Image (cartoon, rainbow, N blue to C red; front, side, top):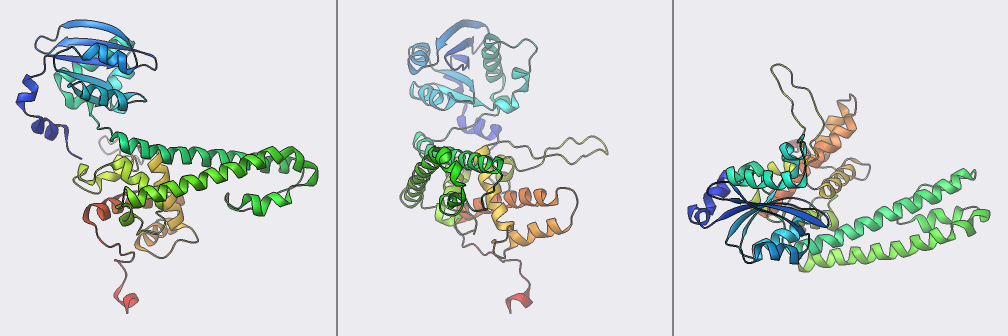
Length: 366
């Protein structure tokens, strides 16, 4: 990814000189706190409580000279950052995961958080590890995927509840996919329980219908709004949902100078705590977007599963599994998901045709 220093160089000294003050806003769900510092002296010019609404943000900023505004990423940060930009101010959205000196402070309060954000932005904006929110259109399209994901979670819970009720009655329902549960497993529900679970089955039928509608909408978005998803879908195991989520979350392939940086972006690289000769093997960071990370892991599970076709990704993962050891299969899935994230970015950036077996032996080709 482009470094904060690179972004600083692009911004230029002229824009820096036009900034009169630095404002830190600690965003709350209903009420936020703002701290205004003089850009030149660093003295506190104003403190204010404001409603976390567009009107509250406008009242704070619309009549003020051009300022640098620092906020933390969160539920409200996307629309707040867009509102601040429209008002003509520069906005920095800090990565909350990397601001431990704020959220782990021994004297933490909304007032102090706002002041700390302002002081850090005035000193060195790179210390905020600023992120860039996706466009509003992309956020709306991503909401379609999140709605679908919510419906799938509801369906899973309902199916598990039906299975649990039947099991507690001394019977079991056959194993099947969630999409075929009503046609294959539901007919085996004991007659004495059928009336009791009927409301759950009715809801399952309606939820399944809504999921199919979402699937149709996702395919429509891929075809009409994001044709680049076809490049990603060359990889078996990557469907419309995963491809669209990947494109929407990353936004622009040019954000990353190297494809391998995407693995760290989605939190699939291991943490490190190296000191001297001590370098323990730690879990992955789980940074970035958890929704996309889960989809990549699911795609990796399919690639390594019984229906996954032969490919370099599958061979790589199976080799890790064959080496054995504790949690070998889990590590293989994570490693394949990380490689998949890198591969998808390379396909997207270059527009290449995917070759599933580039590393195959000459004898196998013959």
